Length: 313
Image (cartoon, rainbow, N blue to C red; front, side, top):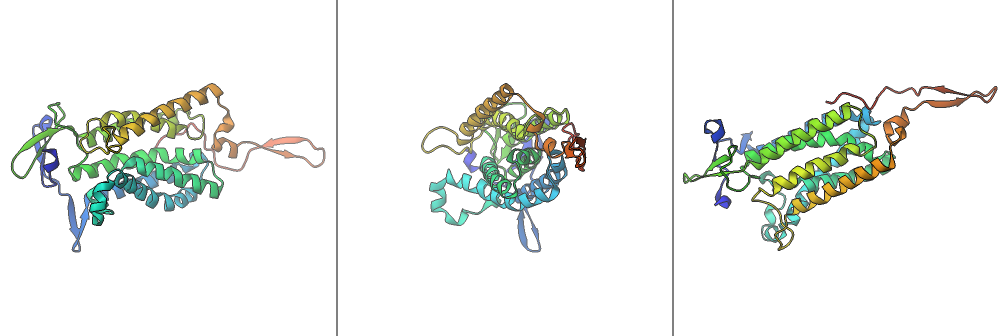
């Protein structure tokens, strides 16, 4: 039944007085069809870019560094998200080659985009001689902003929903033949979960609790991975590993949660130092030797104050 649900299905929410809406999947501009899925994804990238540029000084980076990275990050992340999705449905796409790049129909896997983005950051950081961890922390909050907004593209496409349910927050889908089923609005679950993770990271950063470069991204993997593991189990459109019943995103989420938890414990056991943060190293006092007597004196580096205890955006 779920496979027959089309984009023209009506959407209803019993908990809102059975409110029924019929949002269009696309609109036309100058004779060209524009899909809302792409609009939401693009809006997520735009707002994420603005947030990253604004947050850059807090991590010891410049706005120009952010824009340089994004020139490679955005296209590679989109490509990575698509290849990840297609790779786990290769049998289908080998028979439908014309749909390989039809991203407006959906089919962008966030984990593929994140992994591709991390690879790009590693390469660009090496070229620009910047710390990978500081860059990844810079983009952790913008990444969540993009995910929160992008999930609503799934809503417009009537996709990424879960199995049938009678839970109080269920979403109704009424097919053109008048048949209605009620399902878990998993796109909404994930969007709201991401809002919670976003608020926590902003609070964590504002309180000055970030102790090492990569700390925020590690927390992102821990918290987002935990939520995604649960939510993925409710979905009906999951990607699976080969012919097994193992959901790809659940398996990867579990690995990320365990890996992030292990890293946090290891770093805590090792202990933290102020110089673990790149922003502290570049703004640390500079020792200058006086040529007349060889004595040293401290002077502050000429750079804006970017304490780790800063307000969130």
